[in-house]
Length: 166
Image 1 (cartoon, one colour):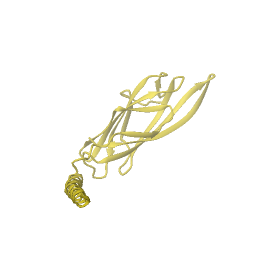
Image 2 (tube, one colour; image 1 turned 180 degrees about the vertical axis):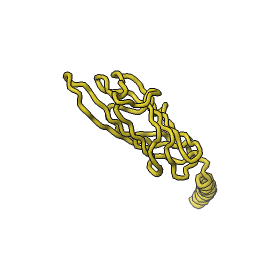
Image 3 (spheres, one colour; image 1 turned 120 degrees about the horizontal axis):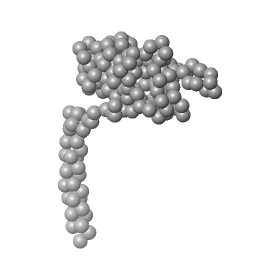
Image 4 (cartoon, helix red, strand yellow; image 1 turned 30 degrees about the horizontal axis):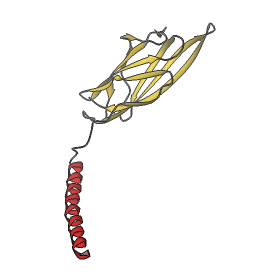
């Protein structure tokens, strides 16, 4: 009686063992073909209180250059005056033209009220043979002034935005 139960258990384990092995091989084959890959998400690090809003951020290829559009928020408790913005791609170059809220940064800078959103655009960023879907790493540096007790103080903050080219 024991041998029948043992034989039945062994057949059960063998049958399901082969089924699990086939499913495992099929899963590995699909993974290697890239079926389970998702598009990479846009992320950032750094920036202090001038934070990017990732849903409004993209780096769009246009021939051998790229155009950046990024929405940021002033998280400081007071207004800031953006005096310079520098945008650099990891493998390429700097943006040729940069605007804040569609204004070129003049000698007096661009005033951003506390809690306000602002849009930074950079055009003509040299890319190193990038194609749509490749991952970019963009460094954005802000130079800005804050009025503290009637005294203007100069500051600088930078951060990195990563995401796929579109």
